[in-house]
Length: 348
Image (cartoon, rainbow, N blue to C red):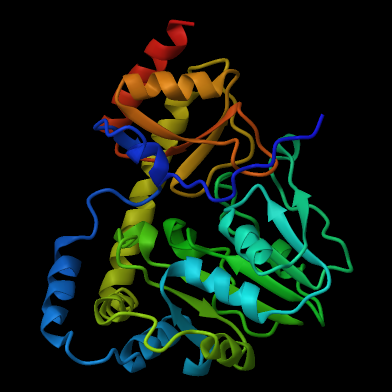
């Protein structure tokens, strides 16, 4: 029997919007209470400048300074999703490998561009740790920390995938949820081959609707990607967000938020440990946890009846219907979720 191919276009927001019910959102990994008031006010102040075409100069310089790179190694994009599309359209490769389970947009973009994609599937039994990638792979894509597993791969293990003649694409959209961003390659410039790092402002700053992200990589490749963009691809408010969120005050706030998130995640994990049927593989390090639970698809539907939306796992290659992704929230929200989960599992 032919296996059912996962829906690579399914995203967590669909879990919240599906039937119009007012649900507590544990399906999308955007920090609650964002954008903060100071950021909303800063964005509102740009509305008087909308008659002028966007100028990327200040924002690009701020991002470059934040990651200690030349400006020529920074490309601002309409969210990380645009970056995946640009890479798929510009890069040429004979043997493309996407490391799964991970965010599905990179593979979807590559397939849409006509590329054949090979998958390396990390296993729960090994804690979703990085496995060997075929030596012939000349384009490798992986996330760190990885969505949906929440596993943070050591920077050395990721860097070891770099090779002369290989393009290594690392999606670090959730790296700012890790205190100290300790395993990031965003500021590393001396690895062999071409190493590309993608970042997003969506998760920590609550800017999914604004669409702002960026690519870091070798200047010639950044120039090729820029040539494939339409004119003025990033709006004036989005550029303002990129600039101010790269400054010292915002980075300090992001670090405090990451530290608080770590405490909330530990609280959630302690609560989940009370359910014997539920298992967590690997060590979660980001703003969500992945759980394995028999009958998870039915549990997800029953949780909706109790007012909670969680992310289904079967749309990620390498997982299946017995997996759920749960966003980390404050302790009060977690307590209410755990109570609902207990009611659902107790009714089985």
